Length: 113
Image 1: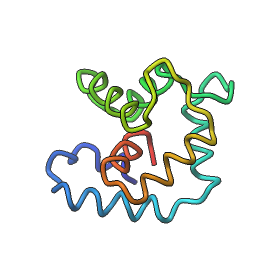
Image 2: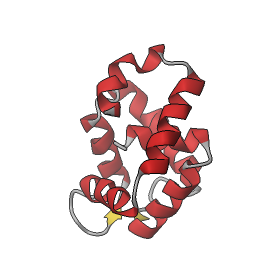
Image 3: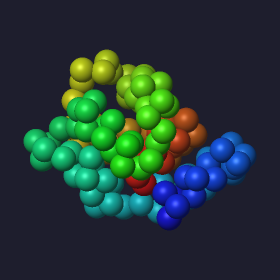
Image 4: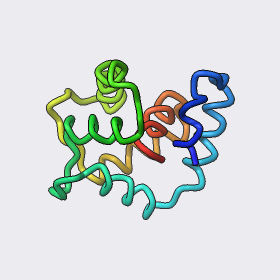
């Protein structure tokens, strides 16, 4: 899967990466988006907070020194501040945007899609 390719992430061209991510996102079902949300929502409260997002990125082997900037980018793309907890419906909405926005698609790649 994509996670196995993470080690070679820096060697991929941006356009190749976006193309790969777009194919994966397009083929995902509503159920698989929900499954990703549930994996991130480790306390099962139906919302994903900043701490849970950080832990999800660590599980995906995103280098720790890159996480703060990535989280800032993520919340910027979500259009909310970092205290906001994302609901499943919001997450699904962001996923729909990711299908047509390469930067958004990159965000979702790191969350485990």
